[in-house]
Image (tube, rainbow, N blue to C red; front, side, top):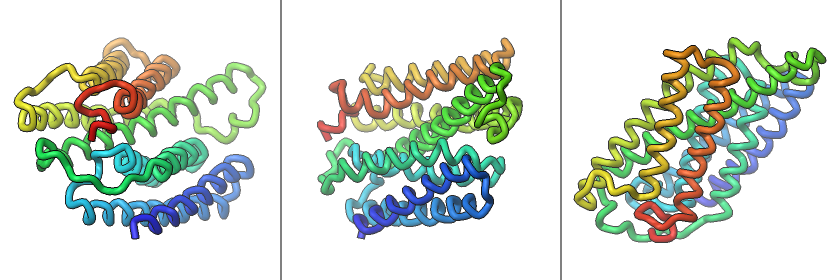
Length: 273
């Protein structure tokens, strides 16, 4: 059933993405409702696909590239739905939904049959570490989208031409405040993910920290986002500076999530799983 749930979800995500893109062009409320409803339905089917995988393999599904992409895409979709309810900014769906669609397509393209889990990874810490880490990364995806929207809107204002995006994107102050609120959620989750990962590493391999490439890049990501929050609170780095730092942070997230796992040998390399 997992396969059918995910194929149906993929189709609905595509429909939702199309309608969010149409909404940013025409700003039609009916188009927005279709985008929102199809996204919610797609996320529901997506979640069922993950649950089916979980039941089949008997442990939290986050130990292969396929499972990680599935989980990450699902959390981005759910995170955006919550963001839209809280902030009422459907225009951001035109930025989030294509990203989410790409991640799910990548997941389906790398579909793998279940494999036995190595004894060292059979732990309750798997679910805690993976879920908090991916929740933090999903939050940073939303922060990235808000940062990009901020820079686009700022460029529109500076050009004084008031082009396509000016009337469609929120005011700069609202985007900046929203970005800050997302960071205050994502950063603690990333912190918990790193700490629980260290505890799990000690349980599995007898060492809290081994300078594995994934650990190093997780620390770099943590320092970038921690520095961003610190600069906002102590040096007044808001607006453009904060948006640029968040984009740099998200590039670190992507490299930590995909680049390290696929390119650098280590305990977290997916091919070694």
